[in-house]
Length: 348
Ligand SMILES: [Zn+2]
Ligand SMILES: [Zn+2]
Image 1 (cartoon, protein in one colour):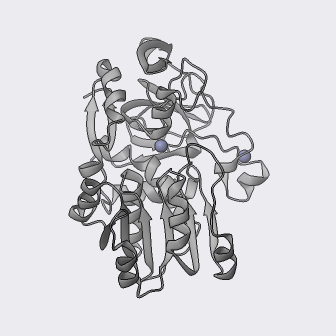
Image 2 (cartoon, protein in one colour):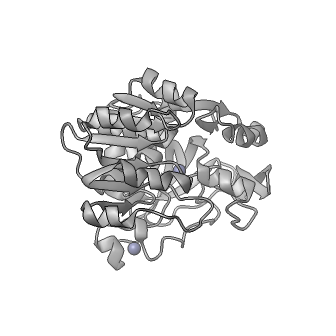
């Protein structure tokens, strides 16, 4: 095996180059993964546009799938057989700090320690992952499906902030890929799911996919009439906002029922103060919850339901797979409102 690998690198705003990096060598508890497929999330898009000005050059990629090719000295091959298909969380959770011990590895004190380190990014031919964050799949599950484990794990981590009961009215603001996966998970839990989406094509798409019971246009003149008809005037027990626009937040609060929970999924840009009906929150016993990244138990459950085929996101949510030589075009296409996830295929 050569000691060099190719990586897809953001070298300047809106500029991609293929660079050579050293193939990383696994530490005692690391797994070396040969990347098969990898896709672009809003995080990579924001760095590409330099809306999120992380230091350049930058190799991202946290939504990927691959094959185990080497393991660290303290791991057993029976646990991580060479040749196994896998997904992995690249976020660092030490297991020792107080947040990790409180079962919230997403807030690990050392979470930034592994970011931007060579060999720890999925937009490269090889990536190192911590064994405790690596999840195996049967070899008949496609890499295209496996790479959805990370975003699905983020969705499940968010939904772990509340308990959906059978028949609960759940509304999801936004029918992008995260909104659709939230709807799919809520449907599996027996909720009555409503999608609210501004883009008519995406709204219709959500209905056609059969991932919700109702899909409303947020600009429709009869929006609140429809909401009250669906919920019999009670509004929604759970409101999940996946739209990262400040103006949507006031609507979220209005959509929430008494005793309801509002989950903020995406990070809002631009990051400015937002006026909300704070007295409604107080007088209606509402709960506000935030969520970021994925927690290990959620990653495990995401891997299990994907392996079982309970959700097949790759059929509708993967718009394009490019060879890495086409990386510039792939990044540009990922920004189009007509694409869901755009990704790369590293080998056949
Ligand atoms: Zn992501
Ligand atoms: Zn920690």
